Length: 73
Ligand SMILES: [Zn+2]
Image 1 (tube, rainbow, N blue to C red):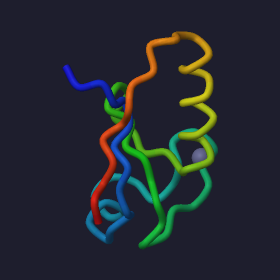
Image 2 (cartoon, rainbow, N blue to C red):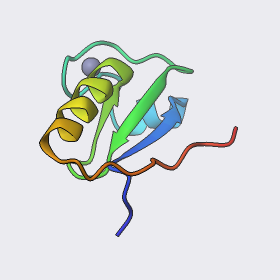
Image 3 (cartoon, rainbow, N blue to C red):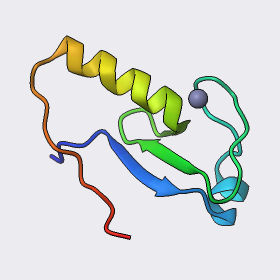
């Protein structure tokens, strides 16, 4: 099992057309080129603000913090 719960990526036209164009948590609009985070547990896209909040919550709930896989480009 991978350790990272979120996959960080840039919003593409394909993502916005195929999945969603808003954050699943705060419903703010996501635009092409925005940094978004795919939640691998709940299969949804989050804006970076919500991802941060959830990640902080997770870190508080468990001390088991591991490095997330960073994108290289
Ligand atoms: Zn959000």
